Length: 169
Image (cartoon, rainbow, N blue to C red):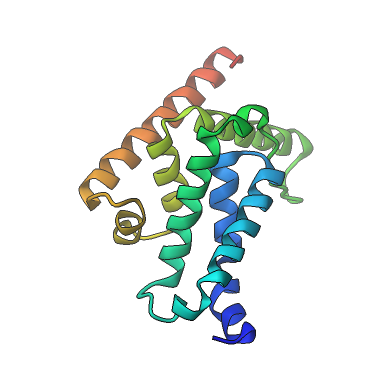
């Protein structure tokens, strides 16, 4: 596979790789490093890449495994949360601040979820993957995906409501 063909195959989902890495590693810098590493690994396999049934699923699985390995290593001790890029010019400043605050709390709550719930929520609600695609990526049954997603959403909802009720996190 030529470099141009490789780029045409891999680049359309490069941002998804980054977002998954960011969700798992939290730090933008760590996520960028992980994405770069995965792209280099994919390039190293470029002669075989055309034979894969679903290159995107393969790359997402590689990213998930790489990030989980990274988290298990000592390097993960200094990761921190810095994410919230939501702006809407049509809302008032007060509402905009409330939305940003809520998004920030959702991010923090998601970071506290068990690893599997965090990944399922990211892939389904953020990346918009179908249940069968998530099942293939995470090697789970679709019913288990639905249960995990339901539990993750319930936890996020309850913690967010609790935070709004009491005004503290």
